[in-house]
Length: 446
Image: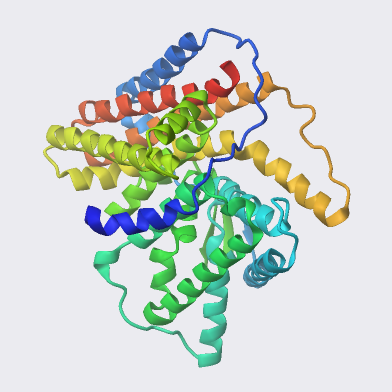
């Protein structure tokens, strides 16, 4: 897309942009248990040392194992569960549309709470724990299946364009999660939230009628994104002969597999960047940059400019790293990117959990209060030091899983030179580790 064509789209987004809202416990100053510089150094060194240890370990000791089956759900129960989940979530979707239009126009309107937090983040958490449930939950897939039932067979439609790949889903993620959620008034506006969902649902159903079920698999941002998040899950649910089997696996196993396309690579990098940007908006540095750009006459959307420049920087750095690896392995940069992009997913998921877990719990309590008239207090016991320490542990753990995933990805693709090929990506992960911890520390240490 040329710059001239992109300008109208950016201008349209800018009309909705406002100051971003934080997703964290209200920050107050406290004394960290050790100097922050030492924390950054120690975490970065831990990630690098883990990568070196894995590289020196006998491949037989760290090879992937097949998941271990924990439980089996009979076919009739699996079918009933899928049907109940589909109909239940369709009812939730309809309720969000109705309450958003008919309810009070306040940020505590259940439509806002349900979509922007319990749906967007809650399904993410479920995906990170037990694999993506979205194919069963998707309201547009449910409507599509109902239409197929009426037609008496599958709606095949035209062949999905191969050149389009997952670019629509990636663009949708950047616009909805990156821009609308972080930089606009939409998450505080029930009516606009309902209008957004109605428009998206219409687009999905119409696309499904034209291109068949392949449209949902490749164009639905929720299906693509939650599917990527589900790679990190230590549990997964697989279908075997109509039955559902719950399988335990190592969290890096699926992350070491190549992703489907360059568009998915872009979504992975965008997911890492977007959650980092979300945290960055809570820092004094972002507020200072926001005001400076506004004073320079950037316009109504300095936050959008910061987001776009940062996203471009993240994509460029990842492209540079894959180009370096490609020279080492004498492979193409695209092949390298497809092979290693999945290893970044644990970083994005860990930071999402660290950054949004309390936000999810608080809003669940808010919804209970809106429905019952009595809001439970769930996090009064959580101190700021304990909260921050938990975030640090999650972020470092996510980076260690990412290193393990990258090791397995390189060992599979380039077994004769995995150490040298892995080094540039390890350097990138160390940089991500330090950046993530710095962002987490800024609201508390300022």
